[in-house]
Image 1 (tube, rainbow, N blue to C red):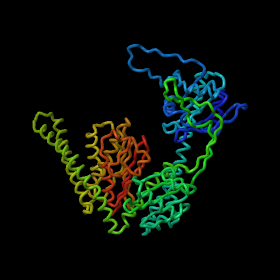
Image 2 (cartoon, rainbow, N blue to C red):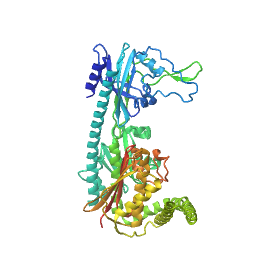
Image 3 (cartoon, rainbow, N blue to C red):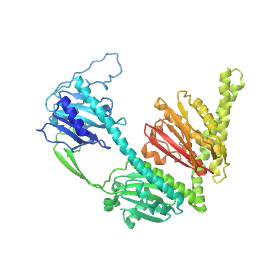
Image 4 (cartoon, one colour):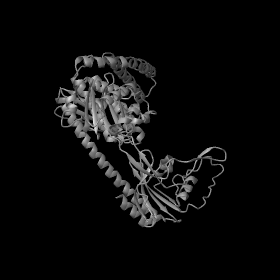
Length: 590
């Protein structure tokens, strides 16, 4: 497909060389397809450092899908703007905008006289370029540029379809493995046996060569792993240095140098923490993949001093093949593997909570209570209750004046009712944090009225009449009414709050009843969650970088998680950055 696209573009514009250039995660690129004149040497497989097309230039390619430099020797003309115009002229969308002199010199150093590029976009990000070179000046007319642009758009769509198809297949493979492990965990009393001694094991949950389960002071190995002594030292290092509940790297020796002696089996490491207090983990290993990279010249960007003695970037002069051997790294962990590992962690944690003995459960709950009690108490009693009391007091003063219009009076009454309702919920949460072992008051809950009331109040609270909310089936569930109300208040509130920046917020609430449980799915088209934060999303005070400007304390989802755990249910999330999030909550019957 790539080769054919390169040939088609060359036929349209008749340039000497047409390459398809793919960007790697670190910004450097590789020539993955090529169509050229017979008298030219091949550049297929050559790598170019990220500095050749810096980040700001890559951002421009996401806005301008084609870029023509008909003659690198032409002299650009300055643009004069009105003297009273204080705003600089923005030429971002202009095809006539001159390019950086460094880039012009870069092309001259390559012997290129004319350059044309077409952007290849995947999920609104720059996947690569169709980069075209001619060794004499050559103008491309509008029709040919548009035809080439169309090929780029068709190729982008085809790449997106094929990549999504591959991702879907991998996701389904991992999902099937985790589903099977979940069944083993529920049927088999021993956690170790369920995860390591069945037809499907933790090794099948990701695409790894080795896996280790560290559980109840036992180390169980699967596949290709470091030896016992090496694993013991690695676990000591994890215990002493790792602060996160989830971590992954494809270059272990860069953070743990002692691993260099077994990088052939463990250059890549993914760690899922089951219990920090008891030092229990699932570890996955990927072997070293030695790469021989052929660079088009030394990849180090040269730096020179100008006449003022200041350092400045200079375009490369040499493009002779420069070979680098990269060792100590593995294949990267994919987003699908990270999601699968995060979901498996939830399944294992759920099974442990169900099967662990009373002493273990009590110890973990006590430790959790001691860590969170002071924080919860301060946050809820001071940061929430004091301003809430102020809101209610001022609302009551305004309401008693008697000078409000009927509509305003109705709104004021709802504010007072809402303040009272929130005060009750705060007291319940505070009591829950202090009395984690108290019995919940279970009853049958009719969900549709609760969801309708929450949506009505939240739409008023966020002043967002344009939010589109779709409600599907709402099967009844069994649980504590106050706590369940709080769960759905948090999840629906988050869905509205984080989808408003999208401009066209859309929320979907759907419940599905099975023979054994009820699963609710709450979806939005909001800002989404970065894949690296998914395993940490239910941790206390954990907020995503892209949500820093949105009001919130980072407490809500951790409260939701504790309530669901207390109901012996499950909660998990699937999300894509800038695409939205879907939270799943499962309540079991009986």
